[in-house]
Length: 233
Image 1: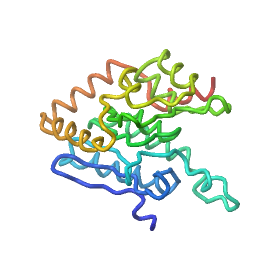
Image 2: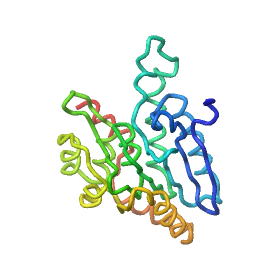
Image 3: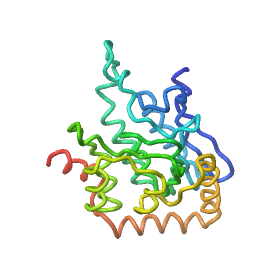
């Protein structure tokens, strides 16, 4: 697969879709893929005809996390050194988005894939899908995952999902208030599109002003500031 097609963007009316397109690798993340995510997210954010954004994976899988062989192979790619900042910048763009972001979590979201799922304003999950936030048992910190949990759900939920280190099913994610809805696995994208199209029918100014008001009344910290405190603790 050429690097030009690692991420696809599709527009359906006022709904934009950002699609991780490495189905053969379970949509695992690499530096080039994340750079495309950043660029193509910005295209949707800048497009006045796009009011709602869906993030999903090709091939019926959300994201398997980092493509570890690409990071730690015999020949380390040049993009490895820039990956942390590019990945963080992408999440900062999601955090600052004034358009609703809907995640369609099919099959699984692991580690960095879980961070992507947690970043979404609405998360639609398959009933049998799983989200695995961290590998705390291996001593691996997941700062972006922790940042999203703290910003959205607080310390208690962060301790639950991170320190527990257990995979959460779609139904469990709804029960814990992490996911918006759990549906049959084959209906995840359809449900995400249904919600996106409903939101896209609202007043765009009303959506933008509501998102800004909620965030202004919430955390006064930037995403980067929260990450800095996590990493320096």
